[in-house]
Length: 195
View 1 (cartoon, rainbow, N blue to C red):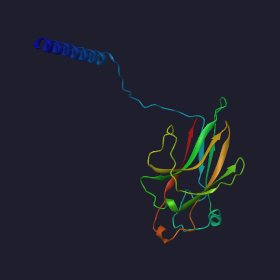
View 2 (view 1 turned 30 degrees about the vertical axis):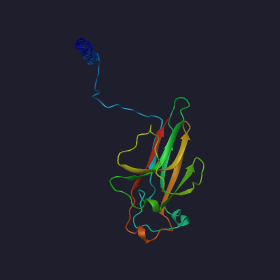
View 3 (view 1 turned 120 degrees about the vertical axis):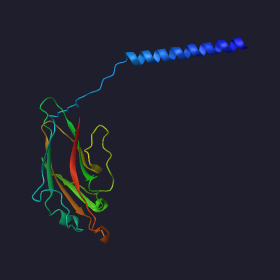
């Protein structure tokens, strides 16, 4: 019995030594490298031009609940997106989002309505919506830093050379009650593109 114990102990010792030797050899001969410089990616296929209208930005300072008809009489936030791909038939997918910011959390979001109308190349009246369901971005799309929540306003594609111009209207829902007093909204429009 003592001899069987010694054989088992010897076999286990040899196996442990082989495992340690193989592991050490693998780590000694494997190559690893650390990147010192950041990757740079340049896109030549997508251009965004923001022209915020006469008031300079999306501004809901001193706003009050109003109907859609009254909101559409206000100056909208305008922007144009263009697929500038010159080579081939490179269609670009895009997502237009309205985003709340982590630096200044918005408390008014659930009472806001929006309408995104396309004005060019052909006018299409958008549907009115409420900022209620956050948008889960495509995992291949990098989000901007400082974004708290994204709300999808438009998803589409642009053919090579195609441009689309949008008017964004944002207002407090006319059915909102006094609980919105003192609440805030600050956000920004982002357009994500991917192929």
